[in-house]
Length: 381
Image (cartoon, rainbow, N blue to C red):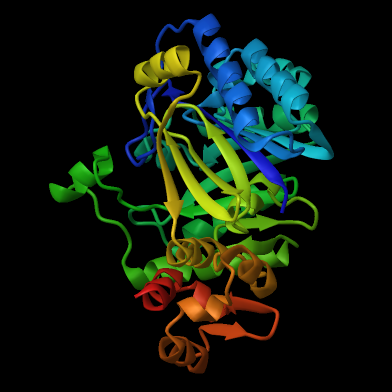
């Protein structure tokens, strides 16, 4: 599975109305303070886990393409010095298609980034306006072309399930995306998250998403179009050509180990047969102060019970087309995964054609993936 590092940059130029991540509007910042904090966090992480080569580094947020490239370079350099990098390590960074982000692409590549993930969301100006994005379709195309000329690997995101979106609308959107993709697409269904501007609009009756059947139809269109283009649905929302999968996200979905640094970041570590869940302070100013005082932004460290760990393995692993490797799960839990499952419920899901398993793997079927949330709710009840 490998070992990963996640860096959370909490700032955006604009907060999108559907986003519930730990983000804040961009403002003037003290680059020196942030540099010192991230480097101190890496030093603390080394003391916690010891030298262990990194399979991936992922810069997320927020909008990490707004980070000064010199700060990105300093973090990568310190991570390589403290932990080491695998020969084919993935160093990924999320970006928006705006001109301010694109102007940094060459410098970010020089800093060591080798995979760029663009938050395009749509190639339609009307949809982009409805989603509250600060770029238009022309900027999206220009940024994608530029990114593909600079970075060895490029992915981009689209959002579907928009108000009034039809199957034909989504087919056209996918045709545009598939014509310009370079090996990886992330297709996310729009959801209403509590506390967001969209949640407030929905509560006032000003926003209505497609019904469950329409959303399932749009999901089916995505599977059909991406499969036809040679992009495997290796995860429920992610499609890739062979070898183009997100190595960092696979660490999450396979319940591997990673260090998370930055405001609100989470870590999962296996130390002395214990599964640790660590959380960093959420507010940027509090996180910076904590690291300056204690060399760590950690606010909570919980030892997960085997049952909690099993739930996380199920929640993440059943999102994958490959499912859960049962031997790996047993090694992590110290007991068979089946010991944490209601066998009667599992048998019902198998009989319904939603889940399948053998001696090596447990996975959700193609039919089950259409109703994955319901399958997981049943297994975890």
